[in-house]
Image (cartoon, rainbow over all chains, first blue to last red; front, side, top):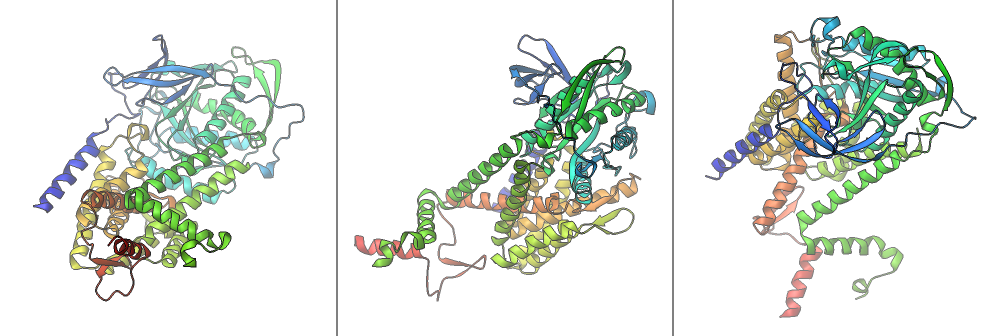
Length: 378
Length: 237
């Protein structure tokens, strides 16, 4: 009887686990729009996303307004966000900027979790098994980073099939890359989005380009540190090539970003953009990443003509800035550890036993400092 | 890298190492052996993967060392029933993990919990209910993920999907290791919670030694708290 009950519980739990999430992904290409619309408190559309939005997700818009999702209407695929403030992007450096020397730069590692993602106008379809157009875009990005004097390494390992195990498999690629290319300055996961083209079309340097969205996972200890890097990249892009970085989304996932405090996910264009436009964009993205990470001078370009406006800004390497992301991540980790440990002790021993054991261990551990205790003297 | 970030990375590794060591310690391993296995997992992670043909490769720290531990725990299992339960739990976990990979949403943000942990939780639930022990949970957590990976490799071969399968490829932070530990944590929590609900262990008259309940007959000493309790009772009388 007990065995039957156990088996029924297992089945119920399995059904619960498997059904408790809706099957939505970034591979919606149906006529039915497969994306969420994010609106502000006044109902004004902020953006659309080919991913499910959840309460407490955060969004930093192109004009640096910071929103937090307060309500989600799953049936209508609408998410409502509240403005929580304006992001102050990292300030420009003073005159004495120290640009990281070649040997101090560290390598930038690149991989594509969804390596079959492709660009319809250039590749013919939105997904090509094992070798999607996204790998060509990642390769262009690698080449453009190398032109900036950065050691960039791209791993084209396939993580197919595109299912719930993709991030588990790409985690192995990321670890392998980090291990083989120490010191690693940053790890980037290259994707393309799946929303209509209009949301990603832009002009940079007088040419038609695609926008880039930065995605950060909020379910890991590196979230703050990674957000600092994302904000720095956006700040440099805003000063040099306005319109290049579309926005920053801070979602519920982890995206393997717990592996490094310098890990980001880039969505370079969408499946309706041309691959060539996405490849061209990587030259500008590489310039921005190089300056944000290793320092340099940002020269503002006119969006329409591509000519310099003469406005120059010194950029300090991110590692020379006073940042607090690492410290906050550390605190977060310790809090989880302490709460988890105390919770476990309470559950396994109960309040009285726990306090007695804690008192006893303190007594024993510190007896040499505090002298013999009363009990021992008896 | 700035000091804050360096400390963060070091702390993350230490937490994983420390929690892992404590969890192994709660199975049939003493402090030193648990420490040794954790060190082997970390050092093995640094060694390049061993190739097992065109489609498969295996990582020393992420798969070989956990597998050695699984075999050790299996051989040392108390009864034939525990062994058979472990096997069933492993097969079911493998099937559930493989199915979860197919059926769960593709993007981490659409899942109620990160994909790296969902497999451990699945293995933990199944292993606890079928295996009823920490050891069986660890066996099912580790071997279940590896079985699901092998099934994926076979599918890739049949469907001509050009993707390699790297068993335990991420080493100490691979889902294989995380899943094994999560399964033990879950077994521990569910077990403790259940015990509290039923008002204490059903093995009150037994002694816990080397991670096993043995008869208390002939036990020469019992812990300080029991002594204190007895003394208190005497005083009250």
